[in-house]
Image (tube, rainbow, N blue to C red):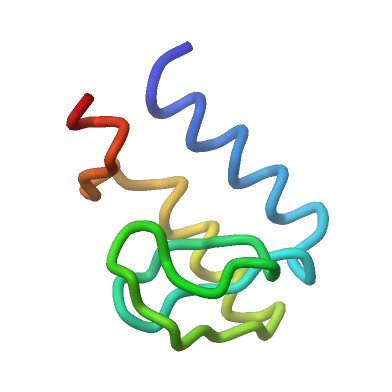
Length: 74
């Protein structure tokens, strides 16, 4: 599956249940509410409002990925 299709699929999943997610205030990544530290930037401040999660999901679905994850280094 192409990167853009995968991002749209992930965004749709998040938009179905935004209360299960939160947005990292450090880097803008969307993580599950069970996350204590952001896996991308190791930040620990999050915005859990549905409005912020929804807006960020729409934004991230429309642009290319720009984070480097540990899986990218393997």
